[in-house]
Image (tube, rainbow, N blue to C red):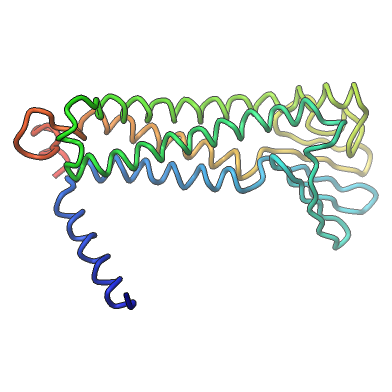
Length: 243
């Protein structure tokens, strides 16, 4: 097929979806899609940032699950730190957080695929499949996964401190950065240190918010009609409110 034929097929499919899906379905699926995109960004970027100015030299370190990016004196270097024997507890925190973000992504993917099929009426014939329950349940589970990831990451300072005391410092002495608070900063003589959660953690929070909206709306719409007749529609009162 050439590009014109592909574009025509896409337009026909898009028109079919627009005609078939109600506004309530579209909103629920849109929030789920936004949450899904946020989980991808969260997984793909850095979760923590450490900055320091020591002896007139500036240092910035961005840390993610598998790698860290170090910027100092015009040198930008990215390397893996996951196998470092000095940072086992820190690694465990990142591992738990990323694992739950991935689980949330999988759950949201299920919600989107099944929700879209259901919104188009494709689940109505499968009367033994409790699609409404499974979609809503997976939506809730996805949100819980994200909340676990967000809250678990708050334990990072304790894990960093334990690693530092057991195996020695990675960058600076244990009492100078990120070992007694989740975010903050301090100055020692003419040197300064700052540490804070970064983009990846923030997008996990945003994903949880979008997911929560999707959960709420999903309880006002039906993705499966097993009583026969028309395809999935939200309650009349709720649909009138949306319109």
